[in-house]
Length: 372
Image 1 (tube, helix red, strand yellow):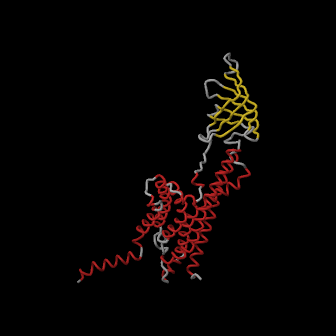
Image 2 (tube, helix red, strand yellow):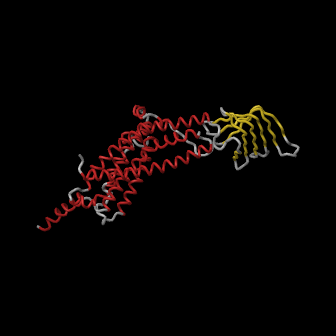
Image 3 (tube, one colour):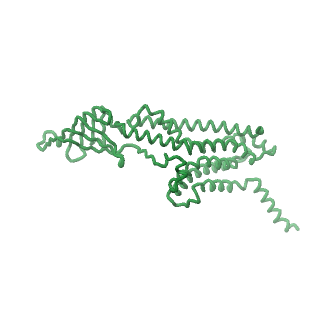
């Protein structure tokens, strides 16, 4: 049975953590839902796959949400206790800041385990599911980047206009009309049938017209050219944001562990960094909270803000350096966590009890010879 103080602090942090996670998930889900609807509107995603696609994206992004959520929850819960003078009362009863580590870690450890499960197991599974949906859409979808039946598609500032009467299954296009004013001569191309495919290397769309007619020139002029063709290729540059999925993001963690490639090592450490970050941020949170509401908190809030952004920015930098070979393998990509932890404790050292005791002891040592 946990002591009352531990249960109380643990409950406060758990309630705050739950509220923050729910809020972050709601915000991320709404943003992803809007992007997904945009892709559906452009024809890049089947409407029947919206919920599955959205769920996979939320599962993929959850490991990156839990560490900052727990850090904010720990700071917020301790800040509330300090504001209500509860930390002062606890300190007067002999329960100092170091005693708060126990209830915090009682919650941090299971949260870190859940985060590790998400990062090591569910995240690559979700990334593989997203990549599979993307691949299916590339193979099956024909309405991509605004190329839809019954609508005009414009490119190059309106110099290129395409109209498709209907789109059949299997990427078959019917009743195609094209006006191309990009060159010196205006060109009109019409065809009853055609096909569409996506070029993997460039991301461009290829519209292939078959057995149609081509008209070059301006109406009424004598140099008007009329011709027929068996096949006419039209290239459309890729539109919008291109989503790329690396093989490593979908690789199971067990395969990464057995690999000797430095890129696989960096990807594995990227997944392990999320649960480790929760434990490190827990160690950072306690000294960043003022015990008494009378103490100035602006400096601590600024330090917490800097520690938060420095921590996650250095994470990306450390993982990039490891993957590119700039840092040795033995150093790993976790050095930034120890660095931020050491810097926070170094800055907060003058306000700690042991520092004041050490300073008082040194002062007595220096003054004792003078007094004698």
